[in-house]
Length: 544
Image 1 (tube, one colour):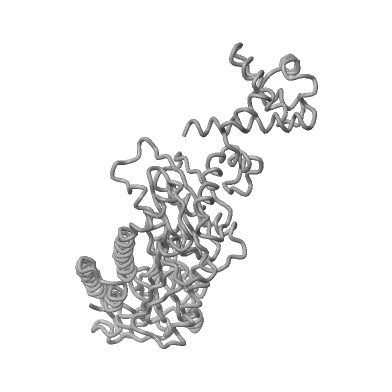
Image 2: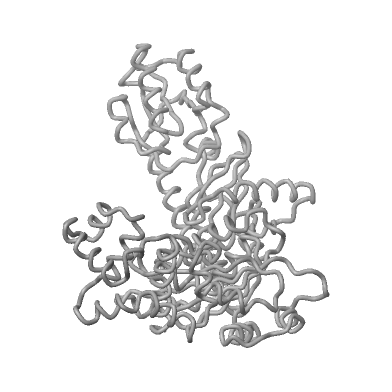
């Protein structure tokens, strides 16, 4: 397969109709590809150019007038034409130095015909060649797509696919994974591979992971990378690219890259899903943790495949809950199929992930691959990506909530930390943070037995008020909570409750009558606030 199906000016001047043509300026631009051939005599008609045209002219529109000829040439350059062919004759007998100087400055090829030539013959010859070349490119691209499909059916690996891609484009290509591993085809010297890998690691780590499509990275004045992310459900699995030297990418090259990226996405997804099916042990581990079954340290290590008796890195337990849109398409990706994508994403954030999807929940056990200086920030960043992927799949109106435990040290305590994540999830609406460490008073309520401690405590401090609300259909408990949360500001409480201050005064008088005059004293106030939050906690427990 040809490595470049474009027709350049250097190739055009070798054709029979250009045997009497001479390049008088812009020699460094002869490698420019020609997309079409156009006859253009005046600068006024330059608006009809799209870029990439080789222009033919007799000089009729500008002749030997300096201002007109420079304006004409400048307009061609501005419109991104690739070269100008002038037939010397009555309108312009020779090319002035000012035109040669301008063309050289912009590396814009300037050709002259010393003998008359029929422009219609040139356009017909070149257009036939260009159309034939484009048809050949389409045939080659179709053949390449079929070969990719065959490789995918043969369960070919990434390296084999990369080598196949390199043969098609006949230039240096590469594959870069977010974990830092890089593959090149053909193989490059070790020092070059290290330099390129470091460059890509630095560049790709700063990219917006949600953007697809081809991008470019300039390495020098003559060398650049054209690359495209391999994506699945908005998550970047890898990058595939081409190293271009003194060459700009043509459409065939970019389409070949796009087809290769699609095939690699299928291979990577298939590989991840196969790995997911082999994780039955991991699922049993989560089933035991969710069922609150105690698991000894050594058994946990064995189940997780952790060898040796050394100190285990810190780990985190997370529960992610989601509710799908009612009108979600039936053929959309099932939520549990995202497990493989989340596993790749967490690995990219330097966690060793263990994940279980049950119903409308994902359970995560994330072990730090190396001690993190700010594990909280890393978790927030990782789950920001998780929420973005979930929202993309379920829709913007999907409800996605999570609870995150404190960092664990002993794996045998994983069940206790899972309970912390459960508690953080339960109170996510009362707390602005998904972290158990930020729950404050709610952390204590979780560990107090509801029978008889919490219910007795609630009855002692809120019982009379609850009985009054139930008997009279009033809302004194809610009024009291808003009043205490407003730090005893009657104006603020009235505004929050959407009632007149006089109405609030009547309610507070009734509360005082039922609870006693000293209900706002420090000790009583603390007990009332604890009782109201305990009531919320028990209500949530009963709903589950």
